[in-house]
Length: 388
Ligand SMILES: NC(=O)c1ccc[n+]([C@@H]2O[C@H](COP(=O)([O-])OP(=O)(O)OC[C@H]3O[C@@H](n4cnc5c(N)ncnc54)[C@H](O)[C@@H]3O)[C@@H](O)[C@H]2O)c1
Image (cartoon, rainbow, N blue to C red):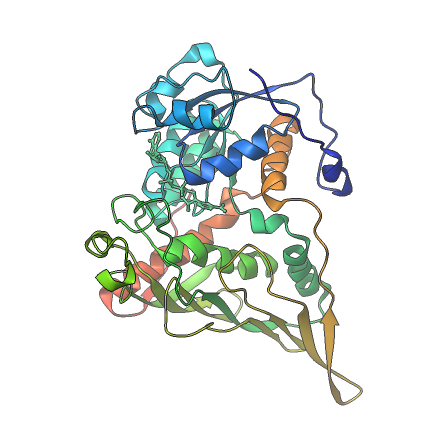
């Protein structure tokens, strides 16, 4: 197939990228050819060691049109679904990228792992904790690379948060406030797959809540969540006047557009969380990490574009004076999305750990799931995570 190859010079600036062995090609298939698949394709075609050999979509003809519109030739697309594509052994696939809506994450990931393939799975990992556990079991059984599509992890400013925490400058962390979100930003530009229960399963929680949870959980070393008291609502998505051009979307809306939770984490840490696709407020606040020696403020962004919303600040005490240290923003010259694809390929080829291991996202999913369940029960619940 013909691949467009842009310059890869930008990757050289990153220490995370291994030397690319172009003689060893990865044969990649696409599961789901919708909106985000376009970003995946653009990144995959930049890689000099990738052959995109197949793609499938549940909507007949959508996969063929998708590759045609992106000028990527020679891709087999005559499959009715992912199982049909996975059964085609003539493809000799090494890996798949799963770009389906949330409700189709778990089954596609499990089927691909059981077919012996490496898997890049879009975020959120899935919808429920039970699904997450089954995905991790399939990963363990098949011993393949499974990476979850959290590209903000690649951002040097996000990495800096973890570095600050690990430096010890904050002392013992005891309270975190995180979340944020949008004043008006229910994602319906390409239809209703984000807002229908049967395709999305979770709304703001799964779309952007998982990012803000990952920002803090990853920084503090992924402590286990113990209990959650959660709330979710849908006051905006269910209003016909929210969508002047598509009032009929209101009836289809079956997920959350706002959620909040109070979560106890192992190590006596409190996580105070809220996330919004729509609310009558500009922001629900910055992310705050409070420690015994210092507090870190991470400015919120308007829509969760995968980074910090400005320079971070540490509030601490020096020689009995209350001072603030500004952490300068780091210029990022590499696309986080390209890095998510490149680091996945490197892990597959070099037998190194997944850049965003599913085991690190398990607690994230457990919290999302706990918020939904607690909200439905109207009380706090204990989070129980089965053995993998
Ligand atoms: N990382 C990011 O920045 C980012 C951004 C947007 C969306 N996403 C995630 O990507 C996922 C997809 O979002 P989208 O906006 O592209 O959705 P979409 O609805 O535009 O595309 C999903 C496609 O998957 C297809 N599909 C579903 N199940 C399938 C199956 N079993 N086999 C083959 N095809 C199947 C659907 O027919 C649809 O065309 C979501 O989970 C979303 O959270 C990630």
